[in-house]
Image (tube, rainbow, N blue to C red; front, top):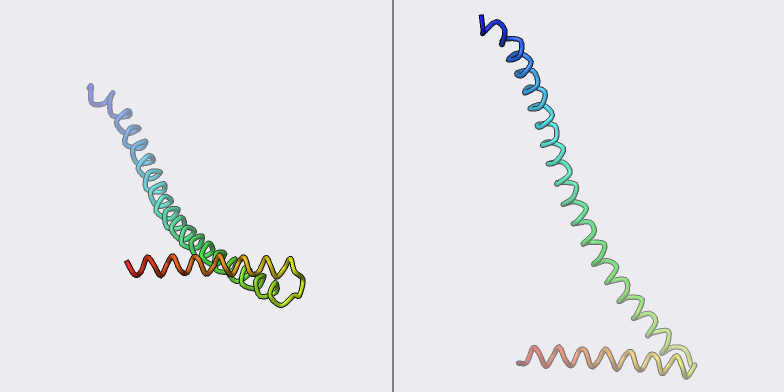
Length: 99
């Protein structure tokens, strides 16, 4: 008798557990997918950051080359200063390598 009165509650509880388990599995799959997308976006961001750094270096080189090519004193002084700065940085690197 008691089992008959509890039976509908047990059935409802099983139903709720199945629904919750299904939702859990859906969210778990979504989480895996989002984690994968996150890794891809992070890798893409790193690639783009490296590309930006490389492009900035190229722009700097072009600016220096333009400064040397132009006969304007200010541009030439700017270019010489940049070249001197680059040479100092190279010298520091060489001295670190020699240590």
